Amino acid sequence: MSKRKTVLITGGAGFIGSHTVDVALERGHAVRVVDNLSGGRESNLAHHGNNADLACEWKDIRDLAPDDPVFSGIDAVIHFAGIGDIVPSIEQPTDYMSVNVQGTVHVLEGAREAGAGKFVYAASSSCYGLADVPTREDHVIQPQYPYALSKYQGEQAALHWHKVYGLPVNVIRIFNAYGTRVRTTGAYGAVFGVFFRQKLAGKPYTVVGDGTQGRDFVYASDVARAFMAAAETDLTGEVWNLGGGNPQSVNRLVELLGGEVVYVPKRPGEPDCTWADITKIKSELGWEPMVPFEEGVALMLAEIDAWKDAPLWDPASIAEATKTWFRYMDKESTS
Image (cartoon, rainbow, N blue to C red):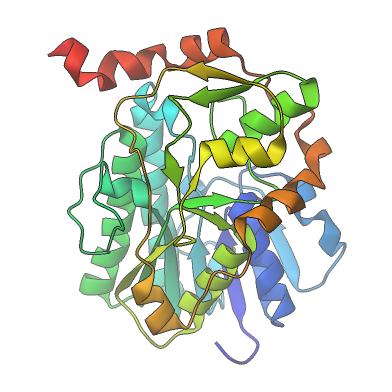
């Protein structure tokens, strides 16, 4: 994909998707975005103005037929669209399977019909469950909750289309992406959205457990570069882990943000540490993380007002939002 190509980015108005749109346009490609705006926002793409190389379709991927015009003449598909909130998946498994699995199949069929030269699937490191660290791509797969299962089954569908139909597919398993434009939905979700809203309100940060848990944070622009590299490489049928390769504790994030802390119970089924072994992606795609954690947090703090309308969580509302999670995931109390 060294010369000008047409790239379809599903979920392109979302967090990571919009950063990938930025990179694709910077490289001179024409970009089509499909997004139903359930998690994405048109404002994430507003800085591109009326760029003639960017076209957007506001529709659900499950409504896409294989011959939908959005697939016409595409050279590559980068597939981010899906439901990303983890905690609500325990209450809404049907929705997650419908969007993250069947929705993926709709996009795969469109890519196959169009003869796309590459399909890159945004997978999740949650497929590994409570994994050994650092985690390699050949680690045992053990999804702990419906979100993780749905994302892994979407991955399996993509690789199956590669095997059976010859669609050139690559998979990237994202660890803990963060950065500007990170989603702030009504669901209890990503730590950055929760903490930034609490900081704006002058409220204490609700730290899960004791805050020593590590997360392998990787900045959104670094994620976008990796996905473009996976779309441009001649390699196919590959699976890569994507993280910063340098886990940071939640306590370190609190230290960078500054403020008081209140602790909430640790959620069962979630790892003490996520840590991607990124040897393979560095070797095969020549990718390296470029944005240090401290710099990434500073970039987000510079735009903290973007979270002023995000939900404001406290221990009581978190307990209410996660009670079903504890009911089904706390194996010790239910065994």
